[in-house]
Length: 387
Image (cartoon, rainbow, N blue to C red):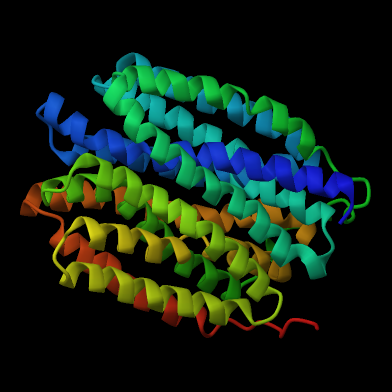
């Protein structure tokens, strides 16, 4: 890959590192919210669920805009929304209006500077035979952010008010307008998007892929949002929650790069099935063990290996089924299914916890859903990779 393509990959990785890293850290604010405002987990969870739903609903539209007009300007709009959302939360996190308005704006921001827009720019610049690995490298940038940001937010919450921490994060996010320049369209990329209609909808295999991605969203957002509160309720010190989330991000670097590489060697749908089965084993095993600092950190490391490895594989399958020139649009549609699952994971986690008094029932559901996702991916018809 040439220098301009490496610039594009680096810029995309930086965008995902900051946007995903900050988003992964929101669960660290939940214990304070529950304690200071004497509220259950349901209100905070519903705001996170709203963010995920907004991101999912608007990702296809932002993706279509990026496919037609280029990714750079779309990312700038997304960064503005994301920064505004963090500022709204920082100015009024304890007020339902500030919390919900902020998360809604963050959902808008993620639609413009998240996976679908970045992946679309990469797919238009990188040859098909290198696409799976390229998507894995860009996803690894997001993984690095998911390690660094929670590890920093934890200590910051000890030193500053949560409003102050959110304002610091807003300032960091505003700087993302700089890597947006690196996402300009590459002159050696694929052809311009073809005209298409509903008759071009990929059909059965695309539907199975989206249904399986629903489970991915449910699992990761439940864990991301509710794991910190769960660990605190089990008697662990708060820093264990921050480091468990950070370990998910650290080991996710290995997982995304490894899955991106494997996706160029093996059928992606088979790798996805294996990932979901292993997630079920790890989650149900975590339930069966006593909750200690060591088991929490081990859970973070193991889940990290399986965390976003689904993303380069799923987006690579979308490119095969729909064409690389329309990846941002059709991945955006698939990602809507993921975000519907995310909505359920964030919201139901809080509802079930407040109704039953603990998270055990939700952990069981999240673990068993991985087996369903594995069964949905296995029948997908996918050509063997060219060697």
